[in-house]
Image (tube, rainbow over all chains, first blue to last red; front, side, top):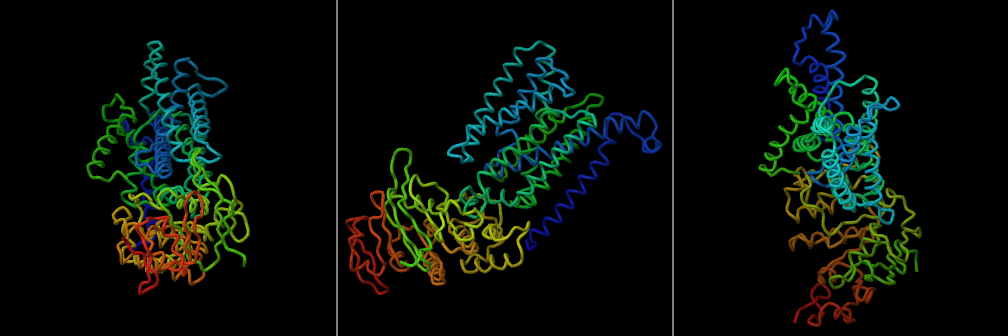
Length: 330
Length: 255
């Protein structure tokens, strides 16, 4: 109780970073085909290729995707002062999903070196971003309630359109769409992964840098404004940054739920409401959670795989109910 | 007139098409303790919000130290003007001390507050009688306990203009008196204080000036010392009130 925020932050950051690094080092060794240390050490095939081409990139994707979703969840929860806000609350992820689903239904594979799903997801997210922003602006001010209402409205429209596209597509596309909508991690090419990690790292750092403003906004907009924060600028920046994190992630993994809801809650219930500590820890531990769920999904019913999105839902749903029972939904 | 710290000129504000305030003017100098009073819906909180820069007036201009309010950068303005809102959410997960430290936001740009900031926060918490529960989470405090934390945060901001929207809501009588005593000390140090209140006797006892809003504007603006000699202002509130001389200045009684 007598620890200063600085000490508390040092302890939690060091701990979370250690778990993150340990996960990055160990999780690639978990999977349906066992990898012997010795074989890997001598770079023998196929072990070496399985590890470097499949497992490492998949683990890194899981670590950064989980981190991005958890961080987007924390920023939306602080900004909207809503315990149930997730990266999906403001409609951008559903917009990204709609774009991706349209790309799958239209058989758009690769255009100009970019996969159709990736391009469709980002285009859908950008469109929703502009729509919500336009709807929420009033007298050059953006308010929390405006963002929330516009986001939820566009969310349901996109959700309905996804169902429509799904219903109108042929059997094979329809199956691909259902599969994609569960959300899962797959091995990605290192060039794609590098771009994604760079985007997430830069956006994530920018969000965490503003943690003092998120703390003020968590109390109230008027409170933040009269303490000296730039409220409209912060809300716009937070919405755009959270959307970039969520949309780039959805584009690669599909909509994976519950990470953005559960992780920030868990961290907040342990370290308190200070976003200077909550946000970096939520990023690191969110990554660990998603990468671990994926590793679990690889071995639980091997050789069949359970998508990471299904595992996070299995864990996240009961966890949420338990939190409600405990009365700690803050 | 000496240069006023705060000037309110011809301020108007509409809620949709309904006018709430029209042509409101007010000059406040350092060391004044102004009670903003009026019936429900008279526009007291609106006026305070406009002075705090939270609402944009439909017409008129506010100047602080002869500079229009809108041209002040947010952080610079926050070093001069602090505002205590009427209500804040009750389920905050941060510790009381962390909330008071938020008052230091505009004064420093470091990631974590300095020991100097912590000392100021502790001193203000002691003044507001909330130091002993500084480690408790705000959500676990009672309404009155929370209110004292919010007041400490406003004081830790070290403002020259202190705007308070019903600062004594939720406070027990002893804490109400304590709160207004702290505010009066603050005013004696040279802070200008504007407090919205429904408690006429607290206003008469502690404030130096009474501003009564009615009919969209300032109906009465008088020194608290002449409230007894010139009791016309009281009729705004109720025909059943009368002001009489008490042991500690003028008092309002019921019929």
